Amino acid sequence: MAGADQAGADRPDRAGLLKLHHLRPAPGARTDRTRVGRGEASKGKTAGRGTKGTKARDTVPARFEGGQMPLHRRVPQLRGFSNALFKTSYQVVNTGRLAELYPQGGDVTPDDLVAKGAVRAGQLVKVLGDGDVPQGLRVSAHAFSASAVQKIEAAGGSATKL
Image 1 (tube, rainbow, N blue to C red):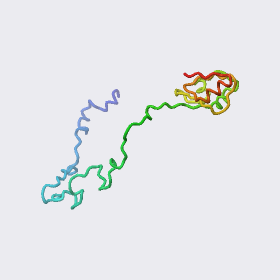
Image 2: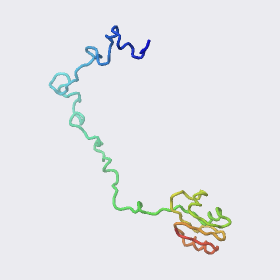
Image 3: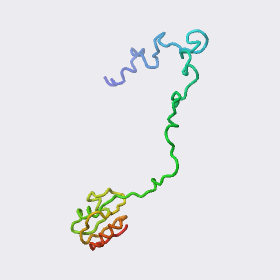
Image 4: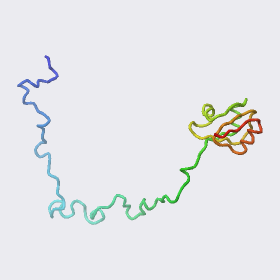
């Protein structure tokens, strides 16, 4: 029984097998397509479009809304220039939050703030002056408000802009 997976390809009694390239549709199963608009016989005069109306005439564009103001004219256009693409956005940390995170003071960097979950990674950090500041806080950030710098320096710390 060697070669059982060949399914008797070399056996003479299996030579008349049905193969895919021999398949044909049954007689009468396929009919010619109806050629519309070719005289007054079947589908001749109106070609299956019915009588009158827009759809009985020429083609209508897909964007046509039956006379209603079309979408491409209803929607306002983008006009002018917007500076939103070029603005600088910061992750904000208040001095009160720094006091919670660093009660004994120490060095504060954006990487430390990311590690403590105060800001998101890879973005600029700005320190604002809402809240008290612990003694000896050395803060490094990308931007500071004037009140934050004043509070940090008044508490004996330093504010370094990156």
